[in-house]
Image 1 (tube, rainbow, N blue to C red):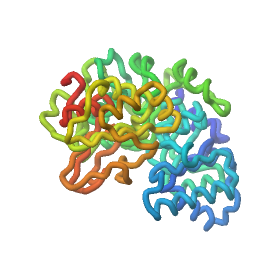
Image 2: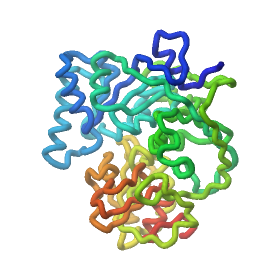
Image 3: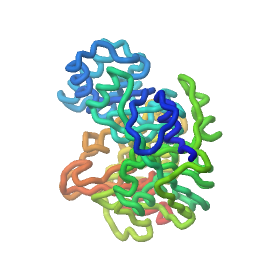
Image 4: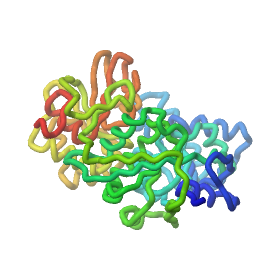
Length: 419
């Protein structure tokens, strides 16, 4: 019996010769990631366990991205814990002020996660890196502490499910629409504890931004990880930024999958996930008249330069409706700079948008766009649970940058074709 890409990566991070789904393994970790919410607890547990030195100063990466620039004393204290630990441990990768970006966009951009890596992060959207052909999954803060100590972690090898995408995408349909459609189809537990492997002719034509978006949101279907078999598009992305060696894995033709789902993408229109779950999706033609108060374009899901280009293309020569607070968040300083150089920032300012420094901010109800009772937001983020972006009486609707931009102009949920 052949092996999936996920099984091969996990096997090669152990001393085992054979490996199959369901096995409990202890595997070596290439990158261990924490942020300003999750890392302070991990650091505390690291010290309680008698830790004095992390297993590898090059492989432990801490990114203060959720509440930076610090919004209050508590968040400043959290970030100081990270700053002090980075200095104490002499970690190789340090991000402060103008170098901080949203972790799941920043690390690939900096070439710190690569194809074939095994990555854990104390953040559920660590699965983003599967777009590169890495095995990446979220863990708890205590698990991060254990990895910082030992360089290894326990895993139950997940079963894999194959998602085969074929057909041609309609205009305005992006990776965000594909993953929202898929989550709507299988539900928030439809891939529970599985590795979602994306393949097919459509996938072969997707750019890295769309792949990152899709891998980012597999957790919203309950998956342990999402993964794309790397190809020439992947290689073009990593070759210009890689800080180390990488390895391309693929799946054997006779690999076993728990299930296979084939989807004709030509039947998919822009999607919107209604509250309170990412699975509560509707095609844009079935949305109806839903007035909104705020639009957020950014996050680890859709804050890349490609996303900002799409939004700016729709907003150029237009303004956000008077009732709308439009917030644009470039995910990293490099993306912010590129948006400035390309004139996108000017377009957003002319559209009456607020431009935020890179931060997770409103996605988790942190700051930079908290909702009041009864308010509605369209966001390019990844979760729309009750109270996710503020008051429990507020509502969040998930959509692509194209739908978000059009909605900002019209003051209601709408696709670009409505302009």
